[in-house]
Amino acid sequence: GAVVGICPLTEANLGDGIFPTAEYLKQGGKFAIGSDSHISINVAEELRLLEYGQRLSKNQRAVLVNEKDRVSNNSPVDENGSSVGQYLYSKATRDGAKAISQNVGEIAIGKRADLVVLDSKHPSLFSKQQSFILDAAIFACSELPVKDVFVAGKQVIRSGGHHLDSKTIENYQSVLMRIV
Image (tube, rainbow, N blue to C red; front, side, top):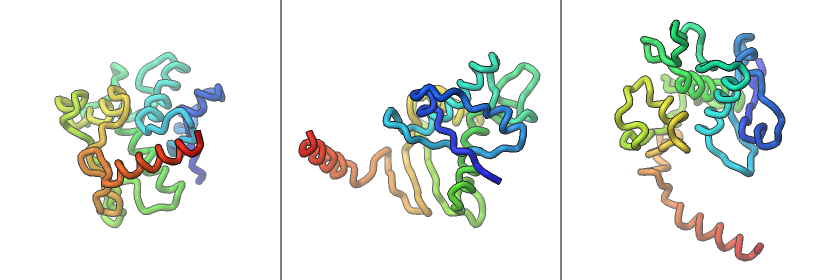
C-alpha cells in the first residue's frame, strides 16, 4: 500500500541512479513525483526525466505506459489516445493524492476541484490533438505551459500569474539583499 516518492532531478543531480520504475509498476507499485532539488522544481521535467531514465536503461521508447496502451509499433499513443504523458501525469497525481491522503488527484464527482489549465495557444500545444496535449506539454516544453490554476474550485493563477507575484518578488529581493 506504500507510494514511492520519486525525485528524478534530485536523483540525477546526486548521482543516486535510476529507480527501476518499469519493474516496480509491473508489480502493481504506486508512485508520486516530488522534488527536494535546489536545481529545479518542475513537474514536467521530473516526469520527462523519469521516462527518459527508463528509456536509457532499457534502450527502448515509451517504457512507462500501460501495456494495454502499447501498439505493435511501440508507439506511446494507441488508437484510444492513451499516451506516456497522460499515463505518467494521471498515475502520479492519483497515487500522489493517496500518499498525502487528500481527496484530489483526478477529475471525478466528490473530488476536490484542484485543476491546472494548460495554455492551448502555447506553440508546442496549439496544434496538437487532445490525446497528445500532455505528451507535448511534458516532452516538448521546458516547463508546463500553465495558464490557470484552481485550488478547491477557487482560481489562484490567472493567465500565468498570481495576484501576489510582484509583492513576492519584492519580498524575495529584500530578503536576499539583507543576506548578501
